[in-house]
Image (cartoon, one colour):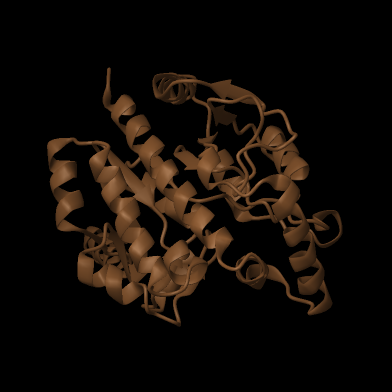
Length: 317
């Protein structure tokens, strides 16, 4: 291919996937400061307005207060945004038509110049693309109950096996088949590290009756494990399960019944695919009279705090 055509093709591709950094993130990159990626699906699909905006601002502040720079990631009118300005965050929190983007949707959203919020998988992809290696979220997707029949398994699990990013969460979402989710992660070679306790946390619940594959008690250990994986040439990231604080949890004995009821209702209504999780989270919110939303907010803030510390440790030699 002639050089002029190669240059034109390169410029065309760059126009199709422009990356825009917020002022704060651009400064942090130039100074080599620790950065924590944050997803945007929780803003557009996870919480109602204005609770979503309030939570997003608190989570970003938590990252800053713990020594790192927050980078909320989203696609806005066909442009990748790494970090959002205050006005952009406020606008996104009220958008009703944002696409929910995973690996399969990201390129088409960009090509069509649409607006979309990033799931765990898409956030990992874009964070890694700009060399951000730590990402804080609420909970990851996984194998849904009944997935042995309908194969409803989140792309998050496969992304964790491919993309080298530390994902800090409160465990797999409680609506999932957690034992199956752990089996898949093990098969894919993804380390599941629970911070500070032996049992796996259950998202809204501090502890499940499921032993964690691994336990680490310090962020230095977590950062070192990630560095060693990279030195060994092992693909993929690490899943860090961070228990919700005891004072904020909904015990598993209580929330498990609510989850079961919500799943039963979704099956009766034949809700499938990407619509399942938003439906379940909304029904659980309604049944618990908003208690699940408050717990969700608490666990995300807690995860942001831990992610910032890991990001700092990763910068250390």
